[in-house]
Each structure stands twice: as structure tokens, then as C-alpha cells.
Length: 400
Image (cartoon, rainbow, N blue to C red):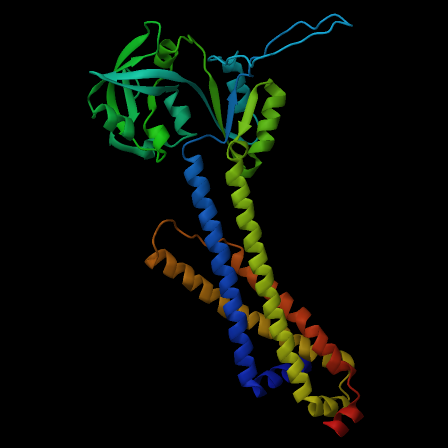
């Protein structure tokens, strides 16, 4: 192998212009792969983080109520116009036992019972439709990092305190320390102290959400001791649909994963991933074609040298390995330069870019890119290598 490597490196040094040209092409291709893949990965991670910053991975609710109509006797012609049954607030039966079961379920990292429902928020003559959200704060913070969303005041929902969205506070003229009257209907009212103001980054939520203690929400919504939702966080983000299906099978409740709730987002992420894979494939193909063309020219230019080497006793297998080693060396060297250039582009984007999001470097991206291009280089070198190995030494020397 030492002889083949020595001859391969000498051929590369003799054709410096061609070698530098193909190395530049490989480096540009690999830098594009590294930067584009990292960019798309960072963008997807940012979108998912923003999406899941305001919702749980799995949302569990009581099953929908349906109309129960007795079947008609056999042979009876029945004309039926059935309207869908109106869905009132439905508490989850035996939610404490379900919570304890979910706490022990493999793959589940956090469980938070929540009671939520519509109400009116009043301050003076101003009235706004709001959504009351009552929760167990320590459990809820493991699902939604509400403490990181506070923009004023403190996160305190006990003892008659509440926190409200920034847009709602603006519309009602509320500030920290102010009073807000909550009206749940049928005479169920409460006056809460605004302990803090949050901003989730979703206008609809920031203009409606009012977080209160679990018991106070149960009282305002006439659900004593009940909850309407159980929020769940899972360890495997993209395995949430599988966990949701298992929860539905265990409890019979409606379990919906974030992937199902955000189906359009998942389609967009899948399309982005497909586009990234296509870009990587075609860049690798262009690199492979470049290496093949350069080595094919090298075989033509070195026909006499190849004939002399064959006449001196170099076997066909050794001549084959000479050009395969050239393809491997070009792939490794070019991909290393390109990976470093791609890393530099990522650093430039994170330092001087628009700073809309941060691009992390996936740990396996550089080795995977280098391996892809190196394999492409060796495969593309096989065609000119086999041609060089088949050259007859007498004919090569005579016609060179």
C-alpha cells in the first residue's frame, strides 16, 4: 500500500493546477452542505422551541360527548337529522389517579393538571373576554417555563394573586399591583391582585390568558375538585404521537400530541428536511463528477507513465489502488477544508448575522459530511482507476 500511496501523491503533485482546482470545488461543496444543513437545523429547532414554549407535548382531555339515540326497530324507515352535541366544560374523571399513572409512565418527564375555561375580565367600565387557567405552579413550570416569560412583577398565583398577559394588561389598563375582577358567570366572581405580567409571544394568548391558582379556577368555573386538561411533557419530542396513543389506550381519554395539533408545521419541517437532503445529494454528486473528470484527464495525460509502471511489474490491482487513493485523498483534504470553511460561515452568521436565531453546530455534521464526500470521491475514482488498470503496457508506451 505504501508504493500505491507514493505514486498517487506524486501524480497529485505533478498536476498541481488540477489538484488545487478540484480541492477548491470539493471545499466549496462541503462548506455549502455544512452551512445549509446547520442553518436548516437551527431554524427548525428555533421554530419548535417557539411553538412548544406555549404548549405541552401531549394534551389530555375528557372524550367528547356524543348524542345517544336508540336504534330503530328492524325494518323501520327512519329519517334523522342529527346535530352535533354542544361541548360544555367537561372535567376529567379520577384525574388524580391518572396523574399518578402518568408520572410513572416511561418516556414521560412532566405531568401538570390544569383547569381552564372562559370568563370575563372587568376593570371599571372595560370588559374583555379572557381564558382562566388554573394550575399547580411547580408542576406547570416543568411543562411551560412561565417564569422565563415574565416581563413585570413576579410569578405569584396564590392567595388571591394572578398573572396576566401583556396585551390584556394593555387593553384593560392594568399594571402590577392593580385589581382585576373575574366573572365566571352565574354569580361566580373574584377580585384578584395582578402580581405580574407575562409575554408568551403569541398575541392571542397574551390578550386572553389569566393564570390563577388551581382551586380558585375550579371555583370560578364551577368545577369543584376537577380539572379539564392534563398537560404532559415527553423525553422524545418526535415520539410524542406514540406516547399520546399509549395514553389513549391506557385511559380512554382524548390524547393529542403537539405533532397532531401542528400538522401544517410538521409538513413544513418535513419539506425543509427533504430539501436539505436533496441539496446535500446533488452537491455530493457534483463533487463526485468533478473528481471523476479530473482523474479521467489524469489517466489520459499519464498513459505513458502508467505503461512504464505496468512494464516494470506494477500489477493491475496496484494501479487500481493508485487512483482510488487519489480519490480518497482529494475527498478527505477537500472535505476537511470545506468543513472548516462551513464552520467559519456559521460563526460569521452567529456573530454578524441578523441574530433572529442561533445556529448550533450538530455534533455529527462535520464527520458525516466528510465521510459522504470521501466515499463519493472513492466511488467516482473507480471508473478512471479501472481504465488505468486495464491499459496494456506495450500499447500505452507505443501510442502515448
